[in-house]
Image 1 (cartoon, rainbow, N blue to C red):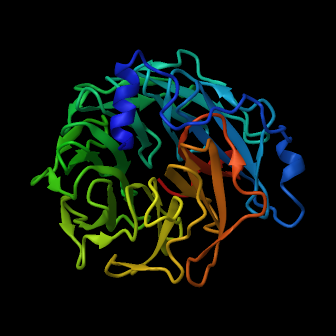
Image 2: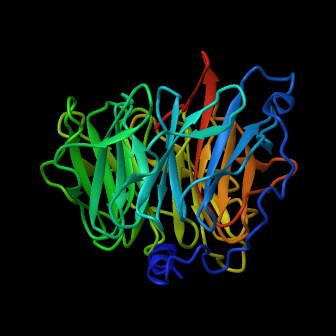
Length: 397
């Protein structure tokens, strides 16, 4: 069953706290290890990872070891609201925002950059539209955008720079297509994009620099494949990639730097090499793209497809050895760490996170020792940050 149908059904069926096929794990099943003990002398890079557990009411937090392994931070998981589905870290490295699909809200937390622990912002959670599914923070750190899957619109909020509290932008929510599923913001601060799963297109908006209000880009919406469920903007701001669940492919676009309009890349759509692509994410160095596939294919288990990205044209070429066939059950999302050394995939069905080292020469993946690492129940969205000057800053949005 398509995950977007499962998610909608979850709320309609009295907001069930688990998704079909999920294997709930007890809270605290993995022993919490203080972040300072897990960093390892081999690296001075301190990173934390956060995972939204859709099948529970919490967020798992991990420290990332020098080898890419994940260890729960003390106090993890941290309480959220019902069916947390996606999260985003603000570019200032102070706050984490989490969409709660089952309670129509957005939770906000402050990040302790020493320990990786999360503390709820006063006033959290903040009201959203119906079935808020994904969240993005603009690169200026001023605004939060949420795709409301059930009300066919996008909520926009202004961030209080001191407290992290959210205030609705004037005119919010803004109209989107049918069942908006994914939202992303380009690194130039100018444009926002929303993948609409039931109308098979992308809504594109200009972001008003002063207010955060959204205005449709001329020509929007732009056509995609069947059931687009994931959207990633290249760190350069030149390209966008969309995973189309229903047509088993990836659509690539060039972004017009002046207008924000999308133009299909040469060779798009690109074959996914598998079945039911759920999550597409790009390495912060811009060299590679990865796709989590949520269904078995020709007898293989769920897997991760890997591609090299042409820096000039944005085109995708499969990495040698791809797809990598050792993800967990129902791989749905993921992230690349801020150093572009490690890739992670959230496995909704098996309740864990797969970890891989990235070959810097060709993008190939190799399983990290100890992978997969336990989450709580039905892990979905994921975000990573790196401690810099006392803050935990994401590498890219």
